[in-house]
Length: 112
Length: 147
Image (spheres, rainbow over the protein chains, first blue to last red):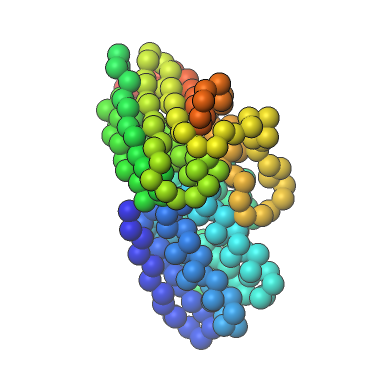
């Protein structure tokens, strides 16, 4: 199953990544590969749009937790937007929903 | 369902989507509510990922055999591999207070399933059996449909 990742720079030092497809053991490394360098670029905010993701497993969650850790060391904001019910449920079971900054829309995440 | 559904996939992550799709179809056919179906699929996916990672030591072409059986109110799934046998006493979910990547798969399985057992009494590999009692989920879905 393929995954599509779209990078956009809506403002200076702000990056959004739109993920389309399932994030599982076969695709989470692709998400990690695109995410990791962004924390080396002095970005102030990195926003991950998950509206196109209906399934995420523990490897996908682990990748996003890594992103959160990188954001702490690089002092960038790391935000997740538009969690689908399936993805939100997995975050809830992992008790991680309150650990991340989560927004309903990309616009809200950009405005904060 | 009298006959179990059996599926064998090679132990490579690219086939995980296939096993999820087959299980989704099966659970749809039995009108298992969406949220429950998603959670059962997550458990099966995590179990197969663990076999690839730990049983076979990485992606390869060894068999992972999944058997799904809905019998009355019980959903039973068995995952059989022929790799390195696991030590079930070492399979424990980690403390969730620590925010760190990894180690959540076992937590998902234990949190969602009603019964989980690992059997290594065989020449090679492990047989994982997971059971979920569907009665509550099916009843609540039927009540919703009546409304």
